[in-house]
Amino acid sequence: MSKDILRELPLFAGLPEEDLDRLLAMGEPVTVRAGDVLIEEGTPADGLYVALEGRFDAALATGKRALAAAKAAAREAMRAYESIGTALWLASARGLTARLNLDRGEAEAAWAELSSLSVDNEERQRDFEGVLFASGPLMQAGLAVGRLADLRRFCGWFIPALEREGVWRFVGELLYWRGLLCLAEGDNSAALADLERGRELLLRAEANCVLWRLDAALAEVLERMGDHEGASAARRRARELVARLTANISDRELRESFLARRDVVALREPGSV
Image (cartoon, rainbow, N blue to C red; front, side):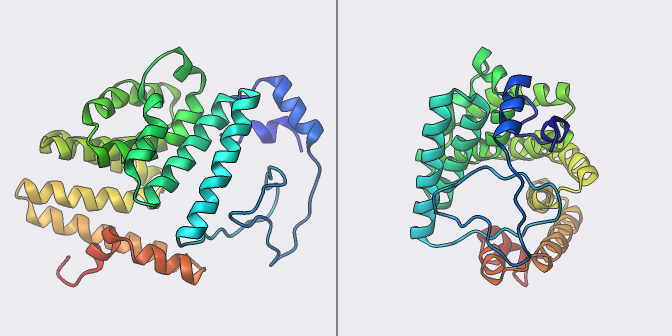
């Protein structure tokens, strides 16, 4: 493995040369046979793995016990990152912890975890990549608890920062979230502009996991604005993307969990066309 490979990974892209050298010195090759379980959710981590060849399937465990175990593991990671002062990984671990809180219906706890990342200052500029990984949970948590002004400020500095970096896939995702923010504020025209631009970027990046949600939000905006034909077309696109994503989920439990999401159920209802 070389430093060039590590630099291609967003998690390591911002690390200085000495940290990359240290990671290479600590690493060792591991061969995993087809069918073997490399990491099991909720168990203590024995290392950090970088896949050099092949592919892995990932499935999330469900249920309160599994979520609690995953949350405890994320907390353990945060304590480790705090001890070595790695801002990027710390912000990423906060994003994971917040996402688990959201899965448990604990939006206030998720916002408390991430609210400090919404402020533009010198520290945020240093852990830019970490804020990037945490931006989705941050926006979701802020919308759930009504912190619209904080989210507006966050979008005001972070979207231009993403545009300067040319990270267009993430610009598209954050435009989706800002479109939802505009919807919550009652500004349908601004929501439409953000969602249409975000859709163009996500379509180019083939980011279907976000694109179906954006199309569902676009349908809501168009419905509010009286464009029923456009709303129906957007819903159909969202349903087609959901069907495509579902067909690619091999794990039965994970597939059923996805189909049980309220927003997916709403799209799949007979009256939703």
